[in-house]
Amino acid sequence: MISTDRKEQLKSSLCSLYEQYGYRRFRMRSFETYDFYAQHREFLADQNLITFQNLDGTLLALKPDITLSIVKNWNTQTDGNEKWYYSENVYRPSRQMHEYREISQIGLEYLGKVGSYTQLEILSLALKSLSLIEMDFSLDLSHIGFISPLLDRCGFDEENRSAALALLSQKNEHELRVLCEKCSVPSGSADDLLRLLSLSGPVPEILLQARSLCRNAQMENALEEISLLYRALASDPLSRALRLDFSLVNNMRYYNALVFAGYLPSLPRVVLSGGRYDLLPQSMGKKDEQAIGFAIALDEVERMLIKPQSARTDVLLLTGGKADLNILQEKVQELVSRGLSVRVEETPSDHYLYSSCYRWEDGSWKEV
Amino acid sequence: MLNIALPKGRLGDTVYALFDKIGYGVSGSLGDDRKLIVEDPDKNVRYLLVKPSDVAVYVEHGAADIGVVGKDILMEQPSDIFELLDLRVGKCRFAVAGKKDFVDDPAVPLRIATSFPHVTQTYYRGKNRQIEIIELHGSIELAPLVGLSDVIVDIVETGSTLRENNLHIIEEIAPISARLICNKSSYHFQLDSIQYIVKKLTEEIES
Image (cartoon, rainbow over all chains, first blue to last red; front, side, top):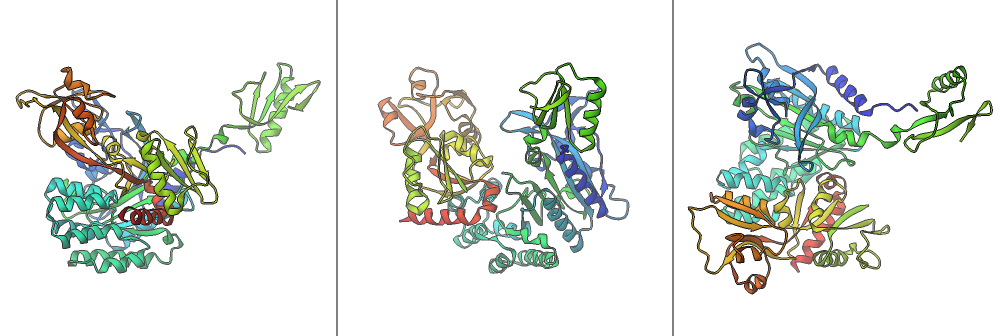
């Protein structure tokens, strides 16, 4: 079989899927001003940027992120909601390699008034996107509206609150307990916070357990929202992959409600990440606006898709410099028309990977 | 198959004994020092015996589903993993140590010899103290004795090595012990085995 580029196929399928749901392609140039990213550095996964100088001396940066640009370009004075998807390269440091990498990212943003249907659509598209990559996958749901009040009740200062969030997202129960003790958090509030770590599992079961942890209306509303979405998704067979996990927080400076993260069994890291991030447009002066979306880390997926066998041609023809040009052409065309991939060389080499090999000898093709 | 990364050496042996107790041992034992992979197809478990500073790398990249690593290594190389349990073995601590007659002059940057530059930097950043780090890879205690540094940041167990070199603990930084870490994706797809191991290990530790 002729090998095809699975990554390009996947990108194409995802883009078609989003277009079917009314999302338009957002395209952007490769850079923004450095100041732009510096102003919103907390939104970025990593604050290291590839910078260079424009001809007029302004400092520019190769884009580490697309969402920021989409929200920046959003003209909130025009009426109506905006639905964008993107398939772009971003530039981020690779931790292990100590160098920058070009990463392809596909994502989806819905800007405007985010109603129940919109959230349903986004979750549904997240599920469908994951299913296009692999049959087996998991999508974790969480809600900042449920987690935040419990954190507030602990009375942490800013530094310790960040530390608590980091420990929560690491599922680090023992150290979170120690932190609560160190900060003299009242034991009731500490116990409530720690209970978040056990609220992880199938949606109906965890929703039930979570109800007893509700301490205010905000938390109850968060659960109600999740419950509504789950019931609406129940008819979609992909919803079997949904789980609730209240240790999931994403970046709380911008995410303010529903958040979710998708995993595949063959990849070690989060593949899909998203949620409601109303706080970002609000921080850009677009008051009373809402936003929801997700991004897929294609560089992770790519490792899974490119199989070494695809570098192998089906047939290697060795001419030894002797085959008549017409005979050679005829053989190549015959193989190609049968859907096989063909490579022609004079002599063999260890570098040539093939499934079968024929040598021109004594007036015919002999299998090697 | 559950892949478990263990640190080669004393800590790995101690931790393996724990896994063995809860039913995750391999027939025979880990035994032979040269073997890097020990597998038990009946129990569906495979042990990877790696350099202690590499355990978190195996787990983060998914080559191992879970692993055991000292908190010192996790603090020096933060990794994107779940830290599920404090195994309460391999207990020691990070400390700042120096000569008994050392007096700190805040007007001058503090020169610190250490093989844990990241831990050192993080600790002193929180204290707003200007420092100069000299990264060494062994026999750190020597540095203040020959004037290479003012103090050191190092792992202290009983403190006898410090005492033998006429050094003493100036400040404790953080406690260290062996931690059970887990790959974020494996957590989702091997949940039952992982939760069982956490539960059983917790029972063992608390008894």
